[in-house]
Length: 359
Ligand SMILES: COc1cc(/C=C/C(=O)SCCNC(=O)CCNC(=O)[C@H](O)C(C)(C)COP(=O)(O)OP(=O)(O)OC[C@H]2O[C@@H](n3cnc4c(N)ncnc43)[C@H](O)[C@@H]2OP(=O)(O)O)ccc1O
Ligand SMILES: O=C(O)CCC(=O)C(=O)O
Ligand SMILES: [Fe+2]
Image: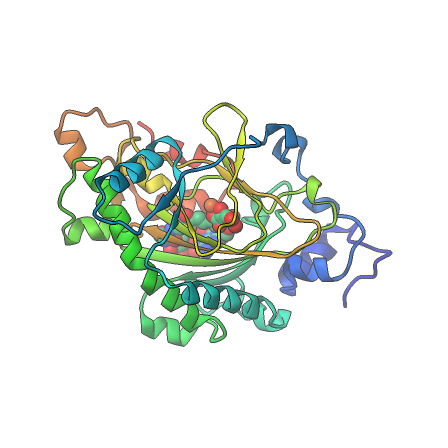
């Protein structure tokens, strides 16, 4: 039974039961119309976004992909990946209707009744490759995050047909398929920037041998200033391709201390960011940069990241071509699935995951 407004989850086990065990998520909490944020979501002061730390005119690079032959384009991409770790691309080859369809599909998934979504939770899902969840790692977090998600790890079309929710399956598959062309273009340019001129099958598999798409749902929140949508983290991917809607709320750490730069929604654009795996493989030349999402007091927000990764069984470390050139490796070789498990088993903690691979 849903708690009444007069009894808003003082008892943590009632909140966990409603949000996690019954699969209502924060969307369910938001729809109860609570007047105040439950205490379990109140973040410590240092994790809340402080307006004075936002760079008012700051912007990450916006890169026009229409003229692929232009040598300046390759330079802009490599510079953005090493200086910012984040950029937006416009005039890329992923059709706008594919992006619109996957946004609609995201809403359609989260509109399903809690008991239907809950079939995909960690406890009930028939596979680890499909997971509906909330916050990040609720069992390890001191304060919860205001976000629900569906995470889909791609193995094959057959597995997707059997296991992924039908309400979003085709749209996510299409988004992943159409994004592959752009992903390959970006990786080719980024490798050239490291003087790695040939991407053979083995290298392609190391860079993009597995893909995971998350559908993120950030419902409107009472007291958004007290919590976060997603806490400070860097992705553990090679590259992340992120589709966001028109609401905004994603912030990237700037180059000076505690300054944060907003990533403004641009219709039809995709946000690209370097993940830890590429930072490690490039021996620190390309940077995975901390980012976070704020909660919104008046609007629901969605985003759809594709995490492009090595395969779980791959060993990752500085690429042999870089080390052969006499560069001193700053990271060791680690099994990628160990690296990802390390990330998933602790609460968001900024850039700390990379320490796992440091020499
Ligand atoms: C959710 O909010 C997020 C997510 C993110 C994500 C950023 C990324 O960069 S995702 C890309 C990660 N890369 C890959 O998925 C490719 C490689 N995959 C693997 O190595 C494996 O599939 C695996 C992820 C390690 C899972 O392998 P498995 O053998 O099934 O291991 P388990 O022991 O079951 O899981 C380990 C540990 O992780 C938790 N977990 C698993 N999957 C997810 C998931 N999709 N989302 C959240 N957590 C997950 C699992 O519960 C286990 O933890 P325990 O505590 O239960 O042991 C960025 C920011 C966000 O806010
Ligand atoms: O929702 C966003 O804009 C970013 C989400 C994110 O950082 C992630 O899922 O890793
Ligand atoms: Fe992220």
